[in-house]
Image (cartoon, rainbow, N blue to C red; front, side):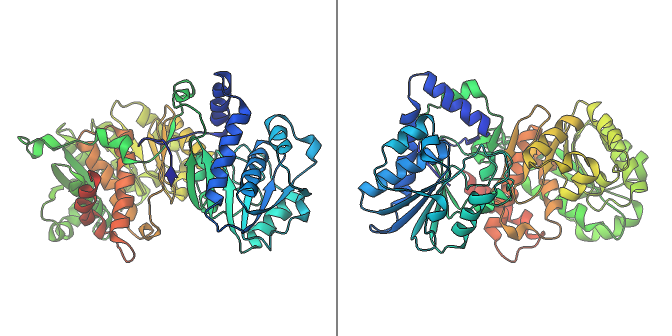
Length: 498
């Protein structure tokens, strides 16, 4: 993503919040047509990377997105490009700033169906912006099909038409852009799947909206970038020792299910916890002992044994769920962990243990002062939140789940979203596809546990772990396996402060 004039923090504005930013800017004295002219110029500048003389086809819609297209058409024609512009709907039905922009266009305005997309060297998609909330059909759908069938480079204005700006859902059909130019701040739909796959390279252009409008809008979603969570990342002191950096506990499953917990424990240690203990049932002690060195090992006998272990308040971060076992084993252990005072990450089998009674889990969470982080993938999420799983937007699903459960909810995927009960949320875009491998999620859970043990606030810890996990995958590249991820963390940390 490229941007102009932004710092490290990248707020994500819903279509409604972006409309409010426009409204506040206009109320402060900047005419809407001035914003549209700046937006069209930004689009034209991106389009002008194509050689002079390129034939450019521009598809304009009936709203302000189409107005941006008219401005870009005028500028590109003046620069020497051969521009063909098609409009969805009648020219005399354009209103407001879009009508003003169209009035300045001196070229021909064709019906959208008459545009030769197949013969274009570049196509500008200015049909619909981020606020689209209905399925695309008819003439517009046919135009999008023609755009996608062409071999031209495609530049989308604001969002590829058909990509819903708040949810990233595809409303019937959507343009597949090579590049998208948006304005002031990105939208969640630029980063949430499946819409993200349609965006291509993203350019965020400044068009004259002041950052101060964010103080009135107070957006709660941001892009997961280190600038957000890095100030909260604990820094070891020169005179410190391991006990200053927390003591994490990861609970192991039975003899044949120990690997997942060891992955999580290794990740907790690598990410920075001062000490890590693997709590093991008796039948798995020998197996775990054979694989552990710097990680300590403690025997626990069921839920009662875990409760006794966690009664030591120095054990301040707990990870439970990876390879934990069936519900009759897992559920009492999770309940014992939640009854303790430590911050907790519940993953995998720990989540599935409550699929028949999720309200029981949520009641336990809301009754404790220390934070809980839930880390479901889509399948586990649907078992705990069957009604919310039907919502179209991942951001909305995660936020409502956090509110209902009282936990930080980390909904995994290529667009991992972290939400807290109060509505703050982060969306990640740095996870390479190579992370889709067995045990990768166990490592992520362990990383969160380690950061919690160090004393990092839960929302920031979950968000940081997601970013660090993704960057570890990028460092390792194709061929990585889960065991590699903790070992890549020293290199990831070395890159953090460059």
